[in-house]
Image (cartoon, rainbow, N blue to C red):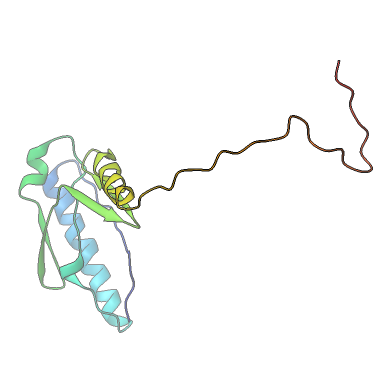
Length: 128
């Protein structure tokens, strides 16, 4: 059995403390999954460091179910792509590439009547 798209957030006053908390949270999740006869797929796990400082993310990694997981520049969760500054540039690029694969058919011209037909039972409003 699998539990898909599980996420945790760990914070700290510095990257070392945040990494230790992330590792602890991961270990708790892996133990919980094992208890309930589920497998944690470390090879599918993603890690993202949310920080304005690039050096925080440079050497970040944690172990998930025995697999070393390095911090990545982007993380995809439930179809949304995040980056370390919570900007959505990469998400928009991926959507644009995806949309470009589907050619748009030209729309037929639509003509609407100037006035809607009267609705039975409703009073008619006279235009000035």
